[in-house]
Length: 193
Length: 155
Image 1 (tube, rainbow over the protein chains, first blue to last red):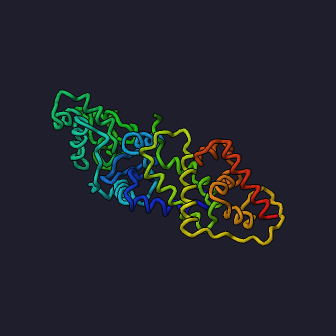
Image 2 (cartoon, each protein chain N blue to C red; image 1 turned 30 degrees about the vertical axis):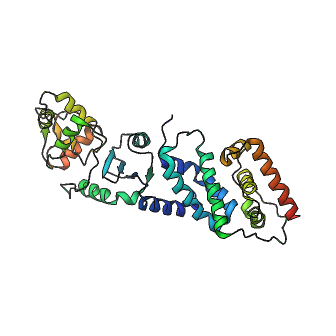
Image 3 (cartoon, rainbow over the protein chains, first blue to last red; image 1 turned 120 degrees about the vertical axis):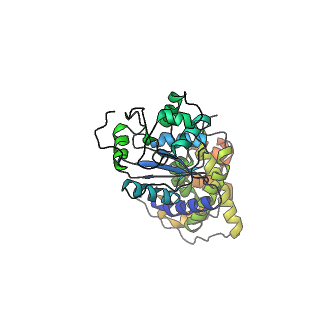
């Protein structure tokens, strides 16, 4: 962005938001694990991209699946960023953010909504999540739902472990899952993957 | 149909060119407003756009219309040019010669846009044609007529 266009672009984004033309607002923010992509719609937080995910690909995906009116608008995500910062500092144990579930349908969304009710500092098994979503035998599908969670961290799929307590998988990598569980006081750092 | 890229990409890639032609077409003072109007209109229409092969041409067409709206709203107010200094610029950036661009601002809309696109944004005739919605030959003619008129006015 050149200096000639900086101010008019800022005004343009404010006007776009005011006129309801900012369908997807996004920003990136720092975390202890690397940069996160945050994206929201008028309904709420729709996507959190973890550090090992390609932010450009995620934006192209949002343009295709939500709306191509995707604009970088950090101010729209101030509250999300504030709560995540507090979470990483260990000062927040419950996110109070409106969520947009549209990127997950059917069984997956039911699994993710069940995950969203797991309290801070507790864990559940993939089997329990499958049961809560209405099909106890669909454990593998429940695992897939966790793996495809579009709103990780806020929808705490890191709190879902294998039966027996092994870590299972994580989109952001197992060290991150382990780190989050240590932050929440669940793990003492001795768990096997 | 190719998928539409995130609008931010469009903004990143083309905002400088849109600003350059608007500055040529309406001057520095009006350019910021026209710029916002251009991209707001583009953002409004974007989800329905079905040809993404020439996003720049599409944006420049909108910018051209916004520049015309701007001139209409202000009334055609020709800027008199008493004297044109012959100053060479090191890098050929035309903004250093405000008198010349003021004279460009007095051209009829189509010639003005064509000259601004050719020399302000350095676009080839086929892209100017796409931006103005005319044939490359007509675009060439508009540039030519515009230059002829400028030479006469600035002589």
